[in-house]
Length: 323
Length: 128
Image (cartoon, rainbow over all chains, first blue to last red; front, side, top):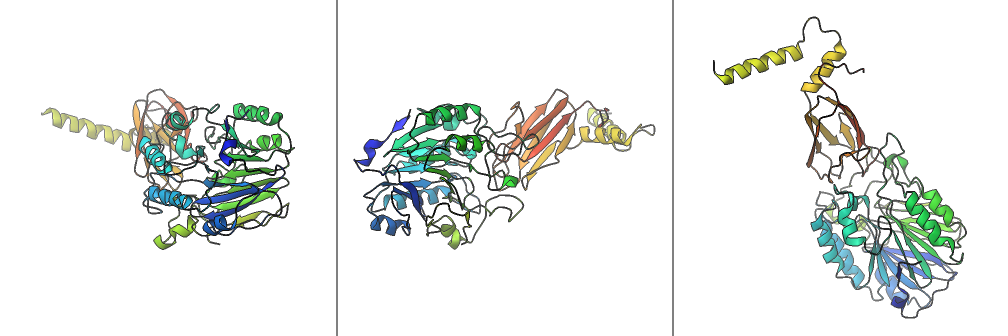
């Protein structure tokens, strides 16, 4: 079932299969995730966390999102540089994460040079990077050819795939190909029937105790429909996961942290390594936000922004970047 | 009379017809349609909007979109009959419309951004 299996990566570390994805730490790099059993606890900022937490009972992985390589507007005149900075921080971690996920918008304009620059930057990472596209990665006139030529090998359909690490099943979904215009839809993202049918089959035979992590660029719950921040058919995908004891959904796209827990499902969006976006409804349109240069790094997440102290079920936690 | 001068006179005559209109002009709608057909062929993308949202042009017109936003946009016909590349700030995209009809389009990055190009022969009223 799995397209990619990385059990070997873990070097025999044992994951408590009932464990929850329970803790994350934000730093300039992205989000550090720890999977292990027991009571959720905070880990502090990235550097401290890695030093304090030997991860004996699980493993960590790191989420990077929305690097927008090629972006050079006032909100961040050099998005490649901040992406490289984020990567350098990952490499400086005392306990390196087992692998990296990039939840889309690798590039800004889907240009070959931007993909080349991003690839070159990611070559500095020692770990495997699992990527999914954002809408900025499939905005070429050929409807995503630039992305799929590069990253579509060993994937299904338009780039979706799964992989397994330490007993956790990761499902990488793509919701940036099926946008329909606002005059005949709500303008939300869509996963589409083909992908949903594939996903239904993929999870059908799995034990309900398998921890599931779902990756998708646009949020799989509707955060702000006026800006299209949601996925119209996400409910179907989540329906297939109802019987699983632990489901974690990791998204990008909105360049800020918003989190929600519903029963066994927790949803998390990530910060960008490039530039912040406005909080929902705070301005008429969701364009890049320019902050004073000295503040840019803080809104890209170089400090700890948030963590969840777990008591299930958790309330919706909105965490604007300025908090 | 030099060819240039003849051309100028011809243009001047055409303008007087379009702008002033013959006294027997049947409706304001027709005059507006004629003006639109001969006039604007540009759509500006600004603040996550296509302006004008509906543009009426004559067959054979090339319409040019210009992105004036800091964010990236695309111009995509709803059934993908045409699609621009990702348009960065100040990038343009042009499309020539030969067949009469209505072409609804949107931004595939921000699908709530929608617009329409109406291609109709000059002289047709905008109500049909």
